[in-house]
Amino acid sequence: MLRNQPRRDLRWLSRDLHWLKRQGRKDRRITLSVLAGVLAAWIRQLSPTDPMPGSGPLLAISLGLVTASGAAWLVAAGFLAITARPRREPAEVLRWVSHIARAKEWAFCSLSAYVAWHLLQFVTALLVR
Image (tube, rainbow, N blue to C red; front, side):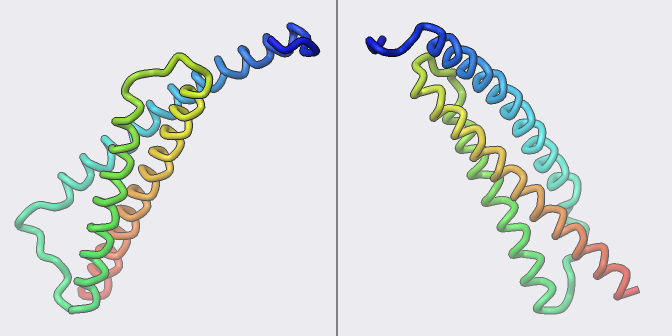
C-alpha cells in the first residue's frame, strides 16, 4: 500500500473488483445464451430442402449474411473460450471482463446478421409470391 493512500480507497477498489466479476459472470451467461440461440436458429433454418433465393444478387447477399453470422459466432466463441477460467489477480480480472465484453459484442453481431438474413428471406418470399 502506498504511504499516502488511505485504507478506505482499497475497500472501494475491492468492491469495484467484485462488482466487475459479478457483471462479467452475468455478461458471460447472456453471451452463452445468445450464442446457443443463434446456433439453434441456424440449425433450424438451414435445412437441405429449403431453396435459396434464385437471383444472383440475392444469393450473394444471403450467403454473405450467413458467412458474416458464422464468422462473428466463431469469434465470440473464441473470446468466450479464453474466459473459461476466472482470474484472481486484479489485472487478470480486467482482461477477463474485457474478453467477455468483446464476446458479447460479437455474439450480438452474429445475432444481427442472422436477423438480417431472416428478414431478407421474408421479404424475398413476399415479393416472389
